[in-house]
Image (cartoon, rainbow, N blue to C red; front, top):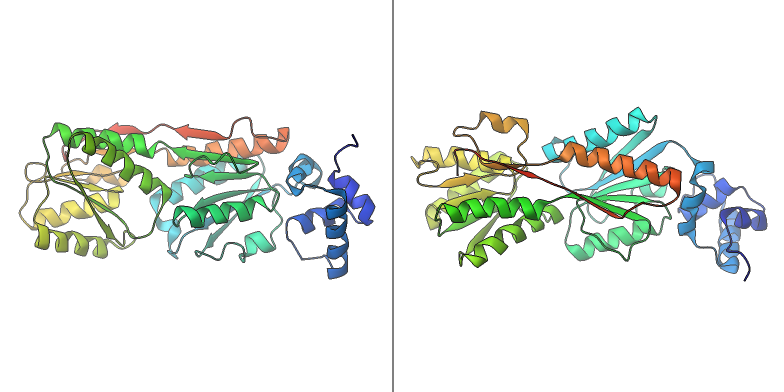
Length: 338
């Protein structure tokens, strides 16, 4: 059986450099003429070269830069504490290893047309995606086709995707801890306020709460709101109270929602937790100012970024991910709010 073709084989057959082959298989058109691109593509097809194998030659093509694409419709995505902490952990770890980070926020459905995907020459990619499952799957398949190793943050494992490592926190487990507190308090009506755009981590939190409440035969009400604007969250909570009255327990998908809800409940003269128990998620430092102290779940967002960077750089050295899924634990932070 003849040896499998490599990037060097393709370069020699097409009479181009391996850097040119790398650009062609990664869809980069800068510095590659149309006739050259077509010639390289023809050789790739003739030899049966698989672009995903380019990862084995990254040492010779290294640019010491990692790309990070965050697909989010919100233009102020970096104001989100979770994203900020994750990116900080990623960037700081890479910096200590003399790597740079190319960060780009991408609007939904514009990933393939983004500069990071079309033009930027990076050694590997990190992604954090919003959107329904089918849309996120299409994003992932498009990125895999670039032939670069990928770390996907907060995505569930998909073994069909090659050269992808999934790094997330245990959102479902943390949500189940919150729900057990709710049940222990004897709550019978529970409302959860969530973002009006889909994030896979939030789906996991909803699933965790539902799993526990279902066993206790407690219905969960979901209310969507624009969680990027606190006044929109306040209006959503106010409208709900006006129409449905106060639930026994109110769960925010994150601490920002929970703290805003607490403020609205207090203006209504409702006592926390006697009238309404309130719960959040993430336990970033600003929650320390909550009164009463917020019951929440501590998120290892910064550590997620560090872990993703560590795994990706190890992949560049060894040629493959040692394991394709890493789930970091979360921890309950008990407070007086519920």
